[in-house]
Amino acid sequence: MQIGIVGAGHIGGTLATLFTRAGHEVALANSRDPRTLADTVAALGPNAHAATAADAAAFGELVAIAVPLKAYSALPPAPFAGKIVVDANNYYAQRDGQIPELDSRSATSTELLARHLPGARVLKAFNTIYYEHLLERGRPDAPAADRYAIPIAGDDAGAKAVLTGLIDEIGFSAVDTGTLADSWRQEPDTPMYGAEVQPDQAVALIAQARR
Amino acid sequence: MSVPAILAAVVGDPAVATLPRDTPLLSGGLGLDSVTVVRLLAEIKTTTGVDVADLDLDLDALATIGTLTDFVAAHREQRDGGEQGGGGQQGGGGQQGVGGQQGVGGQRRGDGEQRGDARG
Image (cartoon, rainbow over all chains, first blue to last red; front, side, top):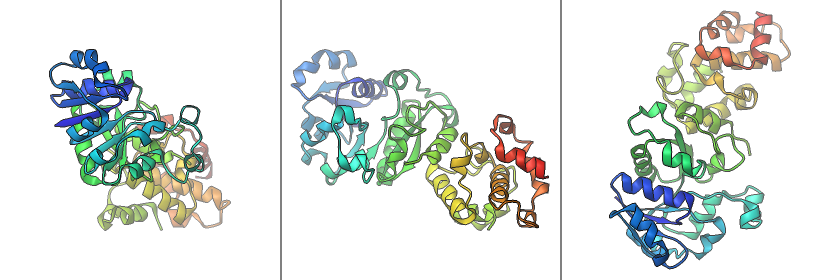
């Protein structure tokens, strides 16, 4: 699969490593000139190349976004239309500034992204796991019930199925937390956030989330 | 409405109401996903007034149909202040012992459990 990754920090870089390792082609972008990623993509091997955010979005059937929430508005919406977009981000008011809709819990952070990218099939995933654990703790050989759970949310069942397959390939089990409106169940300060648990426990923790 | 009946309604399959009490709700059994569990617990809260997610911090009650049924029954009676003759609606005492067979039972926090035992 062709995968775009926007954001080359801890989570973006880790996803690039895992997806290239699994045999996918990755276009990796940061907020600067793609040339600044030359060393990074060289280390990732022949399945990776550096790109602008717009080109990474155009390249990917699935595009992961791992940039701070305050950088959403700088993303060009057009190349994301029709793509499966995976939002790995979290709202931290100290970093992102106060966003009244999120403070009042009338929207989820991923709903804000979806509004900015009309036509994109937006999901939320990879926002709850520490990047080193994402890098090291996948167990592709283990039964699904024994792996660590990665919660995912979204409104598009087909997109969720694709992402679930990718998560399976890198050795984790996707656990559905519901729609984008429900995705607060995997936001910071909920039981599932940062939890390293197997799918059954994840189901329980997700059910226990309180707003 | 009993927990098995609520479960059957949420899952949309009447046959679920007749499954054995030791049927796991999650993997190895019904395989409910978290969205369904959220709906199930919401429906139980609406119907019985028992907020399982709020009362059972580890959610061990989600182990099997039986553990969830017992948990709700214990907390429902507690909530209703030990109403007279109320046991009939849950089939009460007979179910209490079964929970002990569950492996997970040992880790349980147990306000409701203990009260259930004392009553039984």
